[in-house]
Length: 210
Image (cartoon, rainbow, N blue to C red; front, side):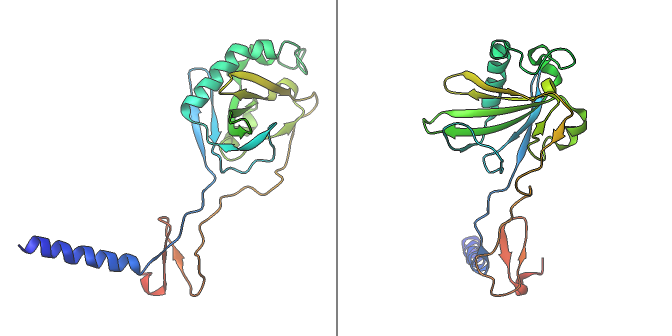
């Protein structure tokens, strides 16, 4: 008979303890995920990641799933030779991109358009100097010809399009339009000093003993 009573007191105490804390709705964090397949490796950035570009008829952003990335890679591998048939900014000292697909690191960003389609923007970089930065931010460049390019994949219609290969010349890394960095949760009220734990729970001065 004592166990139900003890449980009831525990639940009451727990509810009172929770009531003393002000819960803050977490703000989404910028995040990326490393992805790898048999012939590709890169990082996928979720829909909250701030980017400095848009796609045609864009309606919003979309977090690509693992299945989306596998499909995008399959479609690119199958169709890139045809899409790249004109070999713009390639040849000579500039590599022909569809002949060296396994040399490139990837960055993936998802979008949605006004027609409800899911669009994958895939960035390809053949550059050892940026490997440590691949999961930290989108890397945009000028110059470098066939070592830097990106393409779009419509995951619903399976169309591969919008190929852009960098022009010739020395590579230049483009600065971000906005300073990249994570957003943090903030308290709804700032009436006294507070402390934030990773759980997103706000503690007042009296509750800092933990």
